[in-house]
Image 1: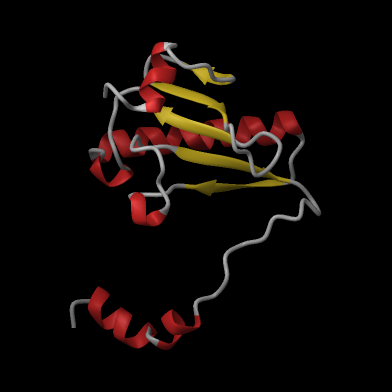
Image 2: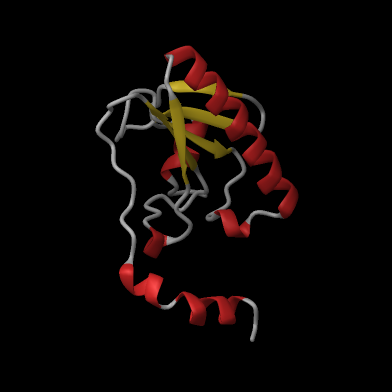
Length: 134
C-alpha cells in the first residue's frame, strides 16, 4: 500500500532496526517500546488487519511470531513475553498493516496487565448466550 508506514519500511524507504527478515516477514524493534527488546513482526504482503488474513497466512504469521518470541527471550535473557495484536482502529491499531508485538518481560519490570471490566463481568451470562447463539 502506497502510504503504509510498514510497507515503506519493508521497501527501505523508512529506517528500522531490523531484527529478522526473509522473503515473507520482517521483524524490527518498536520505536515505542514498552520494554527492552519490544519487537514488531509484520508480513511483507500488505493486509490491513489480522482478521483479513486468509487462514493459512494467519497460521504462518503466528508460527513466525512464536519462533521469534522464543529467540528474543533467549537472546535477551528475558523471563517471559507478552504478545499484542490490535485488530482495527477501535482496538488500538494505529498502523493499518497487520502486526504482532513481542514484548519481552523481565522480573520486576513494572509493566502491568489490563484491568478487569466489572460491567463485562456482570454481563457474562448474556455474553455467553450471544456467543452460543441462544
